[in-house]
Image 1 (cartoon, helix red, strand yellow):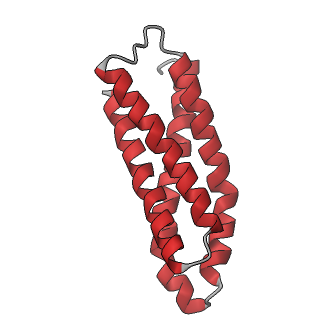
Image 2 (cartoon, one colour; image 1 turned 180 degrees about the vertical axis):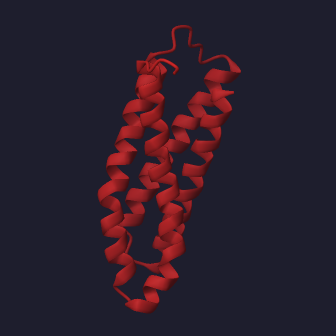
Amino acid sequence: MLPITWETVRLFLHVGAATIWVGGQFTLAGLVPGLRALSPDAPRAAARRFNRIAWPAYFVLVATGIWNVLAISDLSMASPWGRTLMVKVVVAILSGVAAFLHTIARSKVGLAVWGAVASLSAVAALFLGVLLAT
């Protein structure tokens, strides 16, 4: 068996949290039409329940992201890798801000726009994370 290290634990927590944050958003979006058929209030109730695991996952993502960066000894922001990392940080923050704005939105347009921005920026951050790992 391969050894379990702090790097392994850190990456496991980061990927696990990303799975909840990104995958949960798309799962919830897929459920909304069926939930609306049950009750007009059902999507909001499901979203509130999802937020109970989504926001802790987002904060684990942020914490392990910082931990990941601190673990790099020769980080140069002037390198292509460093610039890619900075773009990832920006879109990850955008995902959190947009998700927050989605939770406080009251209009259908606001819900749609901020939900889309949150999800698309989460996917972009996920893609950039994979790009950084290669």
